[in-house]
Length: 220
Ligand code: ATP
Image (cartoon, rainbow, N blue to C red; front, side):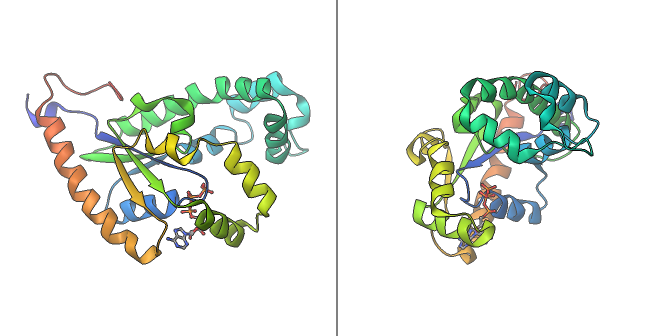
Protein backbone atom coordinates (compact mmCIF):
# COMPACT_ATOMS: atom_id res chain seq x y z
CA UNK A 1 0.00 0.00 0.00
CA UNK A 2 1.43 3.38 -0.97
CA UNK A 3 2.32 5.66 1.90
CA UNK A 4 -0.11 8.29 0.71
CA UNK A 5 -3.00 5.88 1.29
CA UNK A 6 -2.52 6.05 5.02
CA UNK A 7 -4.74 8.80 6.28
CA UNK A 8 -4.40 8.96 10.01
CA UNK A 9 -1.36 9.31 12.22
CA UNK A 10 -0.13 6.67 14.65
CA UNK A 11 -1.69 7.55 18.02
CA UNK A 12 0.39 7.62 21.20
CA UNK A 13 -1.84 8.08 24.25
CA UNK A 14 -0.17 10.02 27.04
CA UNK A 15 -1.50 9.49 30.52
CA UNK A 16 -0.45 9.91 34.14
CA UNK A 17 -1.83 10.69 37.56
CA UNK A 18 -2.68 14.16 38.77
CA UNK A 19 0.40 16.36 38.90
CA UNK A 20 2.65 13.73 37.30
CA UNK A 21 3.84 16.08 34.55
CA UNK A 22 1.56 15.27 31.59
CA UNK A 23 1.36 18.87 30.38
CA UNK A 24 5.09 19.43 30.87
CA UNK A 25 5.83 16.32 28.79
CA UNK A 26 3.21 16.99 26.10
CA UNK A 27 4.59 20.54 25.70
CA UNK A 28 8.02 19.01 25.03
CA UNK A 29 6.56 16.76 22.31
CA UNK A 30 4.87 19.85 20.83
CA UNK A 31 8.27 21.56 20.77
CA UNK A 32 9.50 18.69 18.58
CA UNK A 33 6.67 19.54 16.16
CA UNK A 34 4.41 16.67 17.23
CA UNK A 35 0.69 17.52 17.17
CA UNK A 36 -0.96 17.17 20.59
CA UNK A 37 -4.68 16.43 20.97
CA UNK A 38 -5.67 16.97 24.59
CA UNK A 39 -8.93 15.45 25.84
CA UNK A 40 -8.91 17.83 28.83
CA UNK A 41 -8.90 20.81 26.48
CA UNK A 42 -11.64 19.20 24.39
CA UNK A 43 -13.73 18.53 27.52
CA UNK A 44 -13.44 22.19 28.49
CA UNK A 45 -14.46 23.40 25.05
CA UNK A 46 -17.44 21.05 24.86
CA UNK A 47 -19.01 22.55 27.97
CA UNK A 48 -18.47 26.21 27.05
CA UNK A 49 -21.61 28.39 27.30
CA UNK A 50 -24.10 27.61 24.54
CA UNK A 51 -22.62 24.20 23.68
CA UNK A 52 -25.22 21.43 23.20
CA UNK A 53 -23.35 19.14 25.59
CA UNK A 54 -23.66 21.71 28.38
CA UNK A 55 -27.42 21.80 27.82
CA UNK A 56 -27.58 17.98 28.04
CA UNK A 57 -25.58 17.96 31.28
CA UNK A 58 -27.77 20.62 32.84
CA UNK A 59 -30.94 18.88 31.80
CA UNK A 60 -29.69 15.57 33.28
CA UNK A 61 -28.10 16.90 36.47
CA UNK A 62 -29.84 20.14 37.33
CA UNK A 63 -30.22 23.80 36.47
CA UNK A 64 -28.17 24.81 39.51
CA UNK A 65 -25.08 23.81 37.53
CA UNK A 66 -25.32 27.02 35.53
CA UNK A 67 -24.28 30.43 36.82
CA UNK A 68 -26.02 33.68 35.90
CA UNK A 69 -23.90 33.95 32.72
CA UNK A 70 -24.78 30.45 31.47
CA UNK A 71 -21.41 29.07 32.48
CA UNK A 72 -20.86 25.68 34.03
CA UNK A 73 -20.26 25.80 37.79
CA UNK A 74 -17.27 23.50 37.75
CA UNK A 75 -16.75 23.42 41.50
CA UNK A 76 -20.39 22.49 42.10
CA UNK A 77 -20.14 19.73 39.50
CA UNK A 78 -16.93 18.40 41.07
CA UNK A 79 -18.64 18.27 44.48
CA UNK A 80 -21.61 16.44 42.98
CA UNK A 81 -19.53 13.75 41.30
CA UNK A 82 -17.36 13.31 44.39
CA UNK A 83 -20.41 12.53 46.51
CA UNK A 84 -22.48 10.50 44.04
CA UNK A 85 -21.19 7.64 41.91
CA UNK A 86 -24.45 7.75 39.95
CA UNK A 87 -23.96 11.41 39.03
CA UNK A 88 -20.40 10.66 38.00
CA UNK A 89 -21.59 7.80 35.77
CA UNK A 90 -24.26 10.00 34.17
CA UNK A 91 -21.75 12.76 33.50
CA UNK A 92 -19.24 10.32 32.03
CA UNK A 93 -21.85 8.69 29.80
CA UNK A 94 -22.70 12.11 28.39
CA UNK A 95 -19.15 13.40 28.02
CA UNK A 96 -16.99 10.44 27.02
CA UNK A 97 -18.55 9.66 23.63
CA UNK A 98 -18.46 13.33 22.62
CA UNK A 99 -14.85 13.76 23.75
CA UNK A 100 -13.77 10.69 21.83
CA UNK A 101 -15.68 11.78 18.76
CA UNK A 102 -14.05 15.21 18.81
CA UNK A 103 -10.60 13.71 19.45
CA UNK A 104 -11.10 11.41 16.45
CA UNK A 105 -12.15 14.35 14.31
CA UNK A 106 -9.03 16.32 15.26
CA UNK A 107 -6.76 13.31 14.72
CA UNK A 108 -8.19 12.64 11.26
CA UNK A 109 -7.48 16.24 10.27
CA UNK A 110 -3.78 15.90 11.13
CA UNK A 111 -0.98 15.44 8.65
CA UNK A 112 1.79 13.93 10.75
CA UNK A 113 3.46 10.53 11.21
CA UNK A 114 2.20 10.34 14.77
CA UNK A 115 0.38 12.41 17.36
CA UNK A 116 0.14 12.57 21.12
CA UNK A 117 -3.37 12.07 22.53
CA UNK A 118 -3.48 13.25 26.15
CA UNK A 119 -6.00 11.12 28.09
CA UNK A 120 -5.53 11.70 31.84
CA UNK A 121 -7.98 8.97 32.89
CA UNK A 122 -6.98 6.25 30.44
CA UNK A 123 -6.25 3.71 33.19
CA UNK A 124 -9.59 4.44 34.87
CA UNK A 125 -11.69 4.24 31.69
CA UNK A 126 -10.27 0.88 30.63
CA UNK A 127 -10.19 2.29 27.11
CA UNK A 128 -6.66 1.16 26.31
CA UNK A 129 -7.64 0.38 22.71
CA UNK A 130 -8.20 4.02 21.89
CA UNK A 131 -4.50 4.25 21.04
CA UNK A 132 -1.74 2.41 19.21
CA UNK A 133 0.68 2.90 22.09
CA UNK A 134 0.47 4.10 25.69
CA UNK A 135 3.02 6.41 27.32
CA UNK A 136 2.68 6.83 31.09
CA UNK A 137 4.25 9.80 32.88
CA UNK A 138 5.05 8.60 36.36
CA UNK A 139 6.32 10.37 39.47
CA UNK A 140 6.41 9.34 43.09
CA UNK A 141 3.51 10.51 45.24
CA UNK A 142 5.60 12.81 47.42
CA UNK A 143 6.96 14.74 44.40
CA UNK A 144 3.48 15.04 42.90
CA UNK A 145 2.03 16.30 46.17
CA UNK A 146 4.81 18.87 46.52
CA UNK A 147 4.31 20.12 42.93
CA UNK A 148 0.53 20.33 43.27
CA UNK A 149 0.86 22.28 46.48
CA UNK A 150 3.27 24.67 44.75
CA UNK A 151 1.23 24.99 41.53
CA UNK A 152 -2.35 25.07 42.82
CA UNK A 153 -1.97 25.68 46.53
CA UNK A 154 -3.71 22.34 47.14
CA UNK A 155 -3.78 21.19 50.75
CA UNK A 156 -2.59 17.79 51.86
CA UNK A 157 -6.21 16.64 52.37
CA UNK A 158 -7.25 17.78 48.90
CA UNK A 159 -4.26 16.06 47.35
CA UNK A 160 -4.98 12.83 49.21
CA UNK A 161 -8.63 12.91 48.09
CA UNK A 162 -7.61 13.53 44.48
CA UNK A 163 -5.07 10.69 44.57
CA UNK A 164 -7.59 8.30 46.17
CA UNK A 165 -10.13 9.01 43.41
CA UNK A 166 -7.65 7.96 40.71
CA UNK A 167 -6.13 4.68 39.61
CA UNK A 168 -3.04 3.63 41.57
CA UNK A 169 0.44 4.04 40.11
CA UNK A 170 0.62 0.26 39.61
CA UNK A 171 -2.70 0.14 37.76
CA UNK A 172 -1.49 2.88 35.46
CA UNK A 173 1.93 1.35 34.89
CA UNK A 174 0.23 -1.93 33.97
CA UNK A 175 -1.16 -0.38 30.76
CA UNK A 176 2.12 1.33 29.78
CA UNK A 177 4.13 0.52 26.70
CA UNK A 178 6.58 3.27 27.65
CA UNK A 179 7.19 5.13 30.90
CA UNK A 180 8.72 8.54 31.54
CA UNK A 181 9.99 8.69 35.09
CA UNK A 182 9.39 12.27 36.22
CA UNK A 183 10.36 11.88 39.87
CA UNK A 184 13.61 13.72 39.25
CA UNK A 185 14.66 17.06 37.78
CA UNK A 186 12.59 18.70 35.09
CA UNK A 187 15.82 19.30 33.18
CA UNK A 188 16.10 15.55 32.49
CA UNK A 189 12.82 15.52 30.51
CA UNK A 190 13.87 16.99 27.12
CA UNK A 191 16.38 14.16 26.56
CA UNK A 192 13.79 11.52 27.48
CA UNK A 193 11.19 13.06 25.19
CA UNK A 194 13.63 13.42 22.36
CA UNK A 195 14.62 9.75 22.46
CA UNK A 196 10.96 8.65 22.63
CA UNK A 197 10.25 10.97 19.69
CA UNK A 198 12.80 9.09 17.56
CA UNK A 199 11.30 5.78 18.68
CA UNK A 200 7.76 6.88 17.83
CA UNK A 201 8.82 8.12 14.40
CA UNK A 202 10.21 4.71 13.62
CA UNK A 203 7.25 2.82 15.15
CA UNK A 204 4.88 5.01 13.13
CA UNK A 205 6.86 4.26 10.00
CA UNK A 206 6.73 0.49 10.63
CA UNK A 207 3.03 0.67 11.41
CA UNK A 208 2.33 2.61 8.25
CA UNK A 209 4.28 0.16 6.11
CA UNK A 210 2.57 -2.86 7.62
CA UNK A 211 -0.94 -1.60 6.83
CA UNK A 212 -2.84 -3.88 4.45
CA UNK A 213 -5.45 -1.21 3.95
CA UNK A 214 -5.58 2.56 4.31
CA UNK A 215 -5.73 3.50 7.97
CA UNK A 216 -8.61 5.89 7.69
CA UNK A 217 -10.45 5.04 10.88
CA UNK A 218 -9.07 6.41 14.12
CA UNK A 219 -8.25 3.73 16.65
CA UNK A 220 -9.12 1.06 14.06
P1 ATP B 1 -2.63 17.80 36.14
O1 ATP B 1 -2.85 16.37 36.48
O2 ATP B 1 -3.05 18.71 37.22
O3 ATP B 1 -3.20 18.18 34.80
P2 ATP B 1 -0.04 17.41 34.93
O4 ATP B 1 0.09 15.93 35.05
O5 ATP B 1 -0.34 17.97 33.58
O6 ATP B 1 -1.03 17.99 36.02
P3 ATP B 1 2.08 19.35 35.05
O7 ATP B 1 1.14 20.47 35.05
O8 ATP B 1 2.90 19.12 33.82
O9 ATP B 1 1.33 17.99 35.47
O10 ATP B 1 3.08 19.43 36.29
C1 ATP B 1 2.59 19.74 37.58
C2 ATP B 1 3.45 20.85 38.19
O11 ATP B 1 4.72 20.30 38.49
C3 ATP B 1 3.68 22.01 37.24
O12 ATP B 1 3.75 23.18 37.99
C4 ATP B 1 5.05 21.68 36.61
O13 ATP B 1 5.74 22.84 36.21
C5 ATP B 1 5.74 20.98 37.78
N1 ATP B 1 6.71 19.94 37.37
C6 ATP B 1 6.55 19.02 36.40
N2 ATP B 1 7.62 18.20 36.36
C7 ATP B 1 8.46 18.62 37.32
C8 ATP B 1 9.74 18.19 37.79
N3 ATP B 1 10.37 17.14 37.25
N4 ATP B 1 10.31 18.85 38.82
C9 ATP B 1 9.68 19.90 39.40
N5 ATP B 1 8.48 20.37 39.01
C10 ATP B 1 7.87 19.74 37.99
